[in-house]
Amino acid sequence: MTLKLTNLDSLAGQLVVSAQAYPGEPMRDPRTMAQVAASAVIGGAAAIRVQGIADIQFARAAVEVPVIGLWKDGHDGVFITPTLQHALSCASAGAHIVAIDGTRRPRPDGLTLAQTIAGIHAQSNALVMADCGSFEDAVAAANAGADLIGTTLAGYSGERPKTDGPDLELIAAIAAAELGKPLIAEGRIHSPTQARAALDAGAFAVVVGTAITHPATITGWFKDALGA
View 1 (cartoon, rainbow, N blue to C red):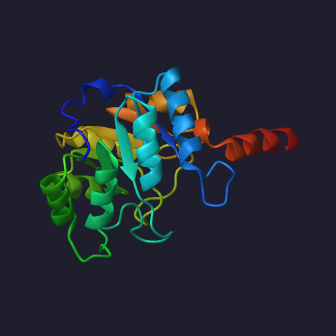
View 2: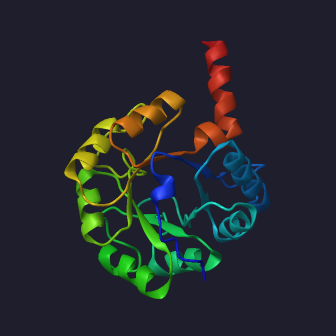
View 3: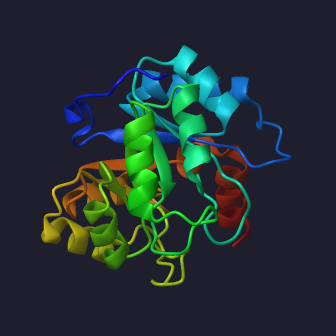
């Protein structure tokens, strides 16, 4: 069982790097993702976020910063750590923080978000990050007992438009509501300027994934610019 993460102060104002690769890609290997995560820590990442049980295990062995773990199961609806059992598996693999779908949509196992979070807290030492898609999600997740609130699903859950870059309006609204939970900005943060803007909008910490750890997408950006 993972060691308890008791202090989130080390993440205040810091960068969290998400190291994930899609199925079928050359880098879709837990060892590779752990190496990418370790490289990000050398660059200054205060925590890392990884997907899959093996990735969590390898990352825990590779880095000495908090590991946010999740388990994607499916592609539509609630698929980010969709059930309590998925979450407990992530915690058992070593995740200090388990990221789960934090929307108000029905969950595959029939549990409410509050029941899921209570189950994680009762049966593991992991904290819970609720990946939300709207202001209403964030309020509900905070009330349900989530330890951290993320904007990960803004633009993907059907409640808000998909912005070009981070949803700064949502970040600012959640921050202004003072929900008493650290707000983690995540989603379409593709440059240092956008990361800074998310922090300035009120985020506690910022997650960057694609722009740091997904070579295929980064290469495509440059190729498209040259062909424009």
